[in-house]
Image (cartoon, rainbow, N blue to C red; front, side, top):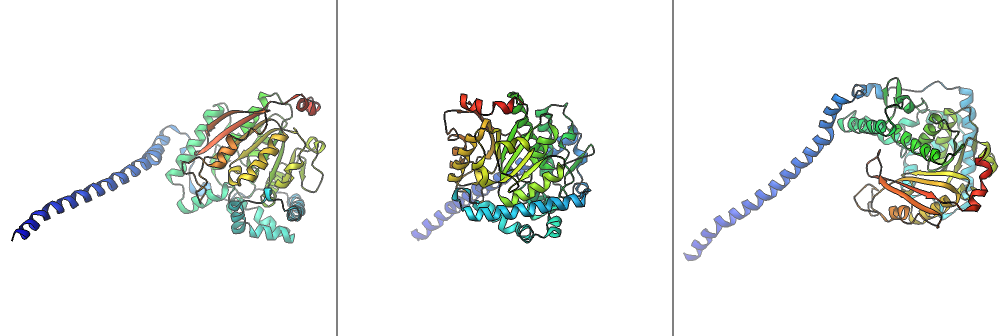
Length: 427
């Protein structure tokens, strides 16, 4: 009897305890959900409501207009000659790359996976010398797999899956107003206008097509131009490591009064796409492709644009580049490759090295931002000063991109470095 009484006495308290525990647990889950929902509303919907009030560009957002076909008018005969040159140089690059087999320039796992999954049709067309098939792929690259990893691909997927959702509109308007604030109200939005090459898509503002990626690329080109002005360089030579399809180069060459010369070093398949884009965008500029002429100081002086495979980087003459630039690709390489690139960059660069890269974790299998500082990022930022001639000017969160840090290094050249290219800068 006593036992039963004790048991019956204990049950209510146990039940109350369990109920209290479950209440606390579900309360925490509920509050966490509310918190997440609140953050989403604040970051997306409420900001969009605010944009409706102060942004004159809000009404430009129409999914139908964004995805309109923009194939452009291209001289077919000229385009055919461009593709012939690209096919020839691509196969030469591939043959040489296989022959060299340099571990430091091996394509990284992330990009090799992208190539295997998305670039096979273009590789086949170029390898077989199929002009018609290559033309078809190039003319639609902004909306196909061959732009994967080069801005346009991921944005197009988002628009197809979710349309013009509030998050997309908000992020676009945020970047646009940052661009206006950074460059000043006097800058014309037509500077952001993108050419009808590769069937691009995006927002049309004041009669100009302005893709989402244009804001970032124009911002980088403006930073580079301001660095050239700071040194009063008459004919700046800019080298980009991993120029993608050539977006930053397009704005750099199109919008600046200074006579820039541009060099790009990238993996062969991406370089073929960049060659197509820049050769059609600038038909009157002198452009050198791999295998057409040796990469020398004289060729750098003679050409406006030089497009070379990544394994040609060691062939650039010392201190022949005024400003070197990289955006978001060095962090994708392994540590030994990063160190190799940094050695080359500090050897060839006369004034500045500007780079923008993710602060992301080494153990993140998806290579996304996780709040941890990666060893690779530390190599890029703390160990970049590979000789006493270099100093770090700043490391700051990027104005135009989330989870990206912008880093600038300046070279303090010795007398020999000054004399090496003095004749070029005086011309």
